Image (cartoon, rainbow, N blue to C red; front, side, top):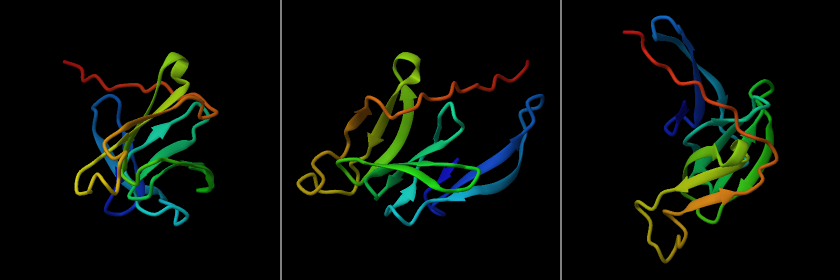
Length: 133
């Protein structure tokens, strides 16, 4: 989970039988190489984490093991808010931006959806939780 207030990615233990989430802890903190705060998380097939930086105009790929920045992709607006892999074989990266609290003449592309055709790696398949009845 991304937390805008702390500029950090949090992880939890998840009991798949009960659905209970415990043991919240910080996995990594957003880089100072990009302004703004991490606002969402997507995971690729290599286990690396992709995060848009709201207020920073970029998407950052992190290595969760050593906490290093692997790639920074600039976006044409500062308000990157959400991210998801999609398309054929999850080979495209979609970046959603917001437009709240900005003047459109300053942030022309705010509120746009950006498509990164080839981020260099495919997204991981996400397993949803379905509670037992």
